[in-house]
Length: 142
Image (cartoon, rainbow, N blue to C red; front, side):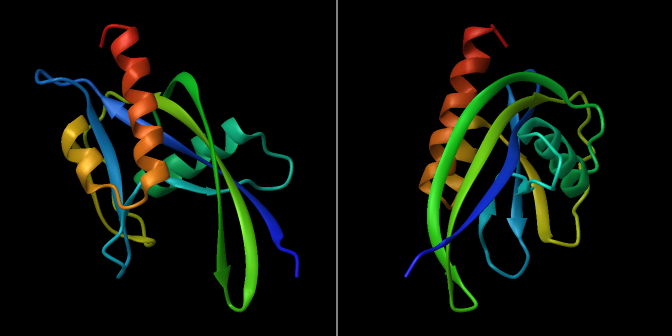
């Protein structure tokens, strides 16, 4: 039995603070799961366009500055009796705003320090993406 392919894109969103960069994580509605903002790539969109759109839709942040491409993760899951393989492309974005909004898909959004964010994230592959984003930030001197 085969699987269906899905492509998504998302962002590691950070803002500068006196104590170092803060990262925005979202809590999925009724699931007690903390994750990075992401969603499906729509027809005709590039991964970057989809990542920017999804982050804005899920957080209300519209001043996203692209810093770099982080990389992609892939995983498989079952939903409604079907087997899926999903690839998610992640980008590093900076915002100057603190006032992220909670979308209908989430119960909460919160700014975390790197260590707090790493501890809060539920999915190990997203933890690796956060680590890569943090390394990029350290290399550019934020």
